[in-house]
View 1 (cartoon, rainbow, N blue to C red):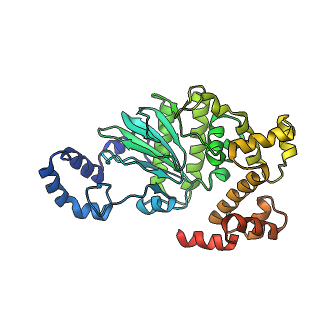
View 2 (view 1 turned 180 degrees about the vertical axis):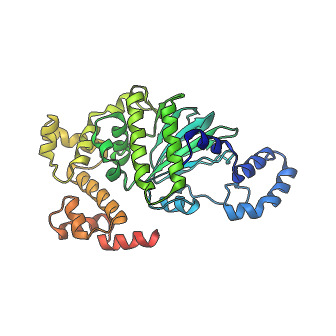
View 3 (view 1 turned 90 degrees about the vertical axis):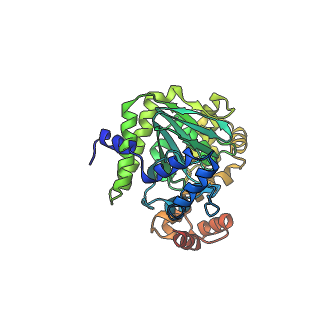
Length: 355
């Protein structure tokens, strides 16, 4: 095991891919040299699928799915969390993911846009990007950027303790998961906080180790990282986009968080009583925030948990139905089929086929 200073030193060394990107960047505005260099690197670019879009055979999906992501990188398909370095001098291109991304500027700075808006980042900045929000990243010097990728479908189950707490980060994740107008991102400015830096470096090293214990260690370090961010910087959170800073403290998010944590037993009456609202007003808040009525929202939460269990466990359909709040397996299968137009068993087979 390397210490954090050794990990940092390794990251500062340019990889073979980064050297190719850097050399291409240097000749990008000199047509003759650029064409000559493209001939020299064509086979390597084809084999490694480098993102140099002047080559007609190079494409990149506008929305990168988990399946696409894991097929491009030699890392575990089974971890809920992975950390990768952003390759310096990679050409800028707009894209989004189906999973959560947490960017961290380890050293220097980077050009960053979110949903078309400039969001420059400097050393120590931590940015939480929701699924399906478009971004670009540009690093054209010796700066270092690390990205945490977190599976969306297992987020509820593996980071339950974060979601059940009432804080700005849990409200952000609840907004991303269930709001019809989710927050486009939020940022912590941690400066030269060595503790945050070392947590990121240990996450990166654990991703590279990738043994039978790594997934659990990655989950635990990520939870510690989130807790440290909240403890040290919760009063300095910056919301991205034309968003009222009070939105992250929206009372309706507390309602959604409570339902998300108690979806097996929650009723509209118990939720209204919990927050001292009338039943009609409580129903109105949920509808305005999610675009769904209470019953539809609870069903959506249950199905999100059910799909995660179908994908990531070998538990029986009956057990999963009971776990997400259905006493009768037929009711679970009927509700699942209504939402996904296939039975839970067929969904599980489809997911295994696509792995």
